[in-house]
Length: 145
Image (cartoon, rainbow, N blue to C red; front, side, top):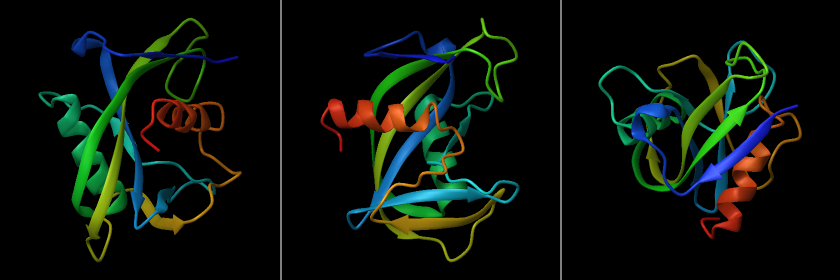
């Protein structure tokens, strides 16, 4: 079982991930990884020397091809439990959640993402079904969606 918590602020050094709920023209922007048959919102690991906002912008570009966009921080979050990233049920990982409105895209992707899906409806087949819907719910609860 995963435990997800949300925070208004958190120590920056704890933040390992950035996740971006992206939209364009009133539609959701979702990603499909080359090695999976599921969909996810853009996001990924923080690299050495990056601010968490730089991580969010880089991941949004890499995974969606977003060139022009407005991005806004929603909140920090933690995930406790065994996941593809966390090795044990006691491991806690921390991330920052953002929302973005994309106004232009590159013609092709430059990452492990096979394609983006621009849609009116959210998928049933999430890559992280116990996490991603909760991040969307929290962004909505806080008035960002």
